[in-house]
Length: 294
Image 1 (spheres, rainbow, N blue to C red):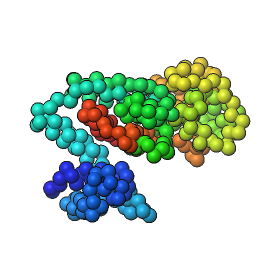
Image 2: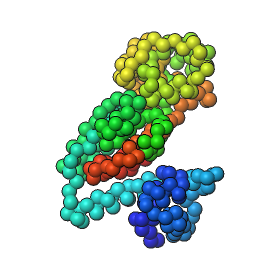
Image 3: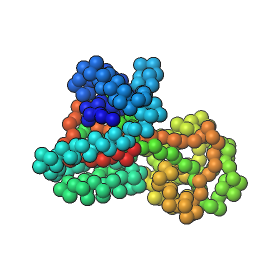
Image 4: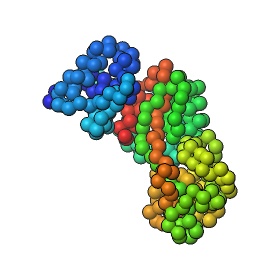
């Protein structure tokens, strides 16, 4: 099987933009060249990689399974290209990350990246997701890692990691002892939540919109750790990312509540940058490293 980096680059761009026309604009190619690259790649693999749904091209099962490996291969190819040219990536990358992502998701990737690129410094500005979006638009960070959606033509959005919010309580909370919590019981409970506007609070509000008309909020915080501590002390019920609660759910200091199936809270984290911006070599390298986490 033979394929080119150009074909793989076209594949990832079409997968991101879900359109050969949009991919052609981003890559400065003709639409026919983009379509041809996809057709050649599918011919070499022997399977279709996309399904057409209306006017959009969506990755099918085969394409979705290949996407992470292709992204990683392109990142390695870029780093190899720099090495062959005798160039060393050096400089500073400034990223904006939501509190959840900064504290619980991105640190290991930063460590791995700096082991490979000792001459690159990474700075993280932490804020809630709206703050990170603003920082990206204002050009105060190279790119952002957020928990919410963005509907702004100035921002390029790259779907990133899958995540899920979990409703949780202390082990001795009455809702834990009875095994499952109904919507009326959740409405009567006291809640400890993230602040309005945060990614977690937005998903929570959207999921329970109209169902918890008389939501009883005992406390609100801009950070996750105070929420976990308050819930552990019995102040009320909380709602945070499963990634944030991983250690506590394993050791039993906090317990995930079973809630109605229609109130599940999956979400997709995102990488964002200015649409009209150009990433520096260090920022581009770290962007690719983050993409490879998918």
